[in-house]
Structures are given as C-alpha cells and as structure tokens.
Length: 473
Image (cartoon, rainbow, N blue to C red; front, side, top):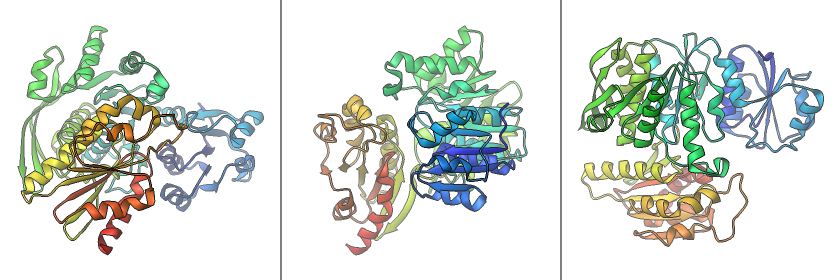
C-alpha cells in the first residue's frame, strides 16, 4: 500500500481527481494540488482544507511545507514534461494514476463499479442516492456532481464503495469489483484503442475481474459481453425490458421493467426483481425523462439489491433522485423558453437526450420545439461519427452548431463542424463565434420551446448566457 498521508494531485480540479481529493481529505490526509485555472471544484476543495496552486510549477510539490508521500496524475491529460511530474520522478516520489489511487481507497470495501460507454455517471449517481436512502452510507466517487448532495465524492461509514469505472484509457482494469455493472458498449475512444475490437475486449477483461457481472439486456453488445462471461464461468445477471429479456434468455434476468406510465411530471416505473435473495415487484417514480434513464434506474436497483440493500428503500431513493449536474439539468425559464444543459457528446447519447426532450414537449401538447446548441467534442470523434451525429441532431427542430472543442487534440485538416451540418435534415446554423451563440439561440427560440446546450466542452458556459440573452430579447 502507498503512504497516502500527504498527497499532491496534478490537475486536481478535474471531475475524477477532485473526487478522490475529497475522499482523501475526509480520511485526514494532507492534500495539495495544482490546476491550470480556478473552478468550482477547486474552490470547494480549498474550503475543505486543500492547498491548491493555479498553474504548474515544481515548487508546488512543497505546498504543504514538505514533499508529498505520493503524487497523483492523469497520464492522458497531463503531459510528461509537466514540471511537477518531472520533479516527482527526480525525487523518487511514488506516482499514481487516479485509478490506482481509487483502487487503494476502495480496498476492504464491498466494491460496486459501474462501466459502459454511456450512462456511467447517471447510473452511479442513482445507485448512490438509492443506497443512501437504504441507510447504507456508501463511499462514492462519481464523474459528475449530484444535484441533491452537491458533491461528486464522499467518504462514507458503510461497507459499500460505489464508483464509476472509466474505460477511456483502460483504467477500469485496475479494480476488483464485487459487482460490476455494464450499461452498454459502443465503439468510442478509438484514439486510444485504435480498433473497435480492442475497445470491446476491455469490457470482457473488466468482467473477468468481477465476482458478479450485471449487464443491460436492451443493449445487445452488453448482453453479448454477459453471454461470453457466462461461457467463461462467471456469475451474470441482466436487467432491462421484458422484450430484451426474451431476446437474451441465456442470461438470468435479475431486474425486468414490467411497467412505465406517465403521471404528471413523473414517470411511474414497475420492476420485477429476480435475485437469489429477493424476488418480487418494486415500484418507484422518476423525475428525469428518457428510456435510457429508466434502464439506468433498473441497473441501480438491481446492483443495490445485490450488495445487500433493501429493495423497497432503494426504490424510495430512486423516487427522490433529482439528477446530476449536466445531465438534462434544468437551468431556467424565460417567458416560456426553458433551457437545459447536457453532457452528451457521443451520437447515441445525443439521440437519447433529444428523444427524451422530444417526448417531453410532445407530452406537454403545447406545440413547443426542441432547439439544440451543440458543440462537437474532439476532432477524432467528429471524423469517426459525423454521419451518426447528423442523424442524432436531426431529431431536434433546429440546431445551432458550434466549432469543434478540440480538448487534448490538435486540429485535423478537413475536419470541422461543417461535415456534420452538411448531412443534417433539419435547419442548422453554423456559429463559429462562441460569444455570439447565446444571441443566435435567443433569436430562434419562442415561448414553449425547449433549448438544450449540449456537449462535453465549454458549451456548458452558454446556458446561463442564453437565459440572459432571452431576458434582453
């Protein structure tokens, strides 16, 4: 085990890094860190006792007055010539990836890990809220901030530790889950894996690490992963709709969605549990729209049951779930124009969120439209899935399309947002001026419309500015 009494985190403001920093502080460690800029997570950690420098400098390793006992970094996001990383190597200080640290923090706990191309954060968050309602007080590390708790991590006093298992750089293979949930599998992060086959393989390898594998039966790739796991002698359960359970009869269905109806602003969900310990019907309500969210809730219910919680109390927690920041997050209403923000950045996610938005405005019956302001994330992803993005975005009534947010990538010749726009079947406006986007959206929106800012980059900053522009219109 690594000495975690004094830990320095490079890039401490990131979603994953800030989470483990919170847990270290809760456990009494001295925490220091650095980040390129100030942010809400950085300010929250400072308020909790962390010492954080803005900007990277080798002197930051001595923010506590002495060198740290461990340095944590994201090898994907932090360049190898980072001065703090260089000094840590020179001083012989143990270097950990964020996943290595999380694995050590989970040692001795009942580990519930949630993986998948889409839905990890929402499903993990649902599982946490449900387990809290069941009185379990789990520790958790989530890639997003729970609306109700206002945090993305917590050191609990219960036996269960709930965390996302990130496949983007294969770091999920660092864990030893008691229960491993796989929500879905669809090619992504091909800049890291190179081929679809290698991306699919990492989920098979992840399943091999688990005592009990839970897969979504409505996603054929996840179900096939479960079937292969069974062939290797692993314990597997499935969750999903009755139709999906019938399509994959080899996998024991642990949670089957048997009913779904709308009552006002909430959906009423009925699930039949079929586990060795518990069997019977469970009912709860959901305030977050979308079939994908219904499936996520069934996964959380089944996983919580498998780690020993009371299903009735888990259901109560799911009924109280208010969502996660940037997952269909309501930002405000101006003169009947509602603005939401969502993290969707893969075609399947975009499709699911826009379908949910469409269902919402149709159910309201007031003739409202769905308007999306979308920022593509990564040149490689845009090039790989341009046609799929165009099809998904065409589920909106009108689209304002921003320039690509490159993040860690450099521009690729010929790869621009235009290659998406050219294939769309609904009105689309290319908006190269980020600062002009709020006024552009405001000029399009009318009372009754639902506006979505969408993407994994800086587009989230526009939701509040759109509300301001609507006020001024």
